[in-house]
Image 1 (cartoon, rainbow, N blue to C red):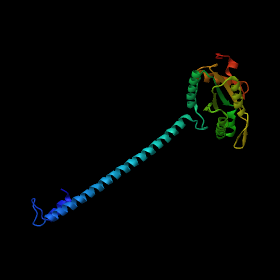
Image 2 (image 1 turned 90 degrees about the vertical axis):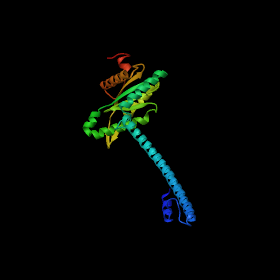
Image 3 (image 1 turned 180 degrees about the vertical axis):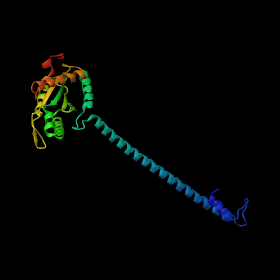
Image 4 (image 1 turned 180 degrees about the horizontal axis):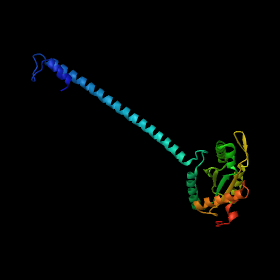
Length: 252
């Protein structure tokens, strides 16, 4: 029995299931009022609970959306840290190795060729020794800024570390390759202005062609490196094609 009703019955003298004389009509009125108020109270509570449940659901959805957004941002940030060179913003060694594997697989499937260029800045150590590592770092950043806009979207440019960079020209033929490489080395023959300092820093480039010179990641990198060092030996600021110097399949 409703507590309010119990209190009202007690006031009317209700005891042992009996009312005092003349109190029945008042009893009926009290019962109607009490249960009407109880129904209104119940409806209010139900409405409150329903509203609270809806608000909780909306809050949950909002928190879920925020969580997913923050998670996506975190994932994007970690992905960037894992694949981008922290200094220059271009691909790092790890990301380049993954790209090279992908390009090798795609070239084998499609029967196309690509060229891998190993680039090393000429006299970069002298820049650091003379002007400091901060100037050297700024030069590396400028290299990325200059080269990246001047290659095709399908090509790959990455920094392996120090002053070593790699370029992949995908889906090429001989005439096109010569044009692309001439453009690439020409980018380094223009002066670099770093903090009002005019730096004449060129690059030595070693080139291997897939699959003519090698058909796997390890041999491509090894032979490109060999060709680059031959470029250094021959006076720097030039391009050396692995096959032209060592001959196909040679490991000298």
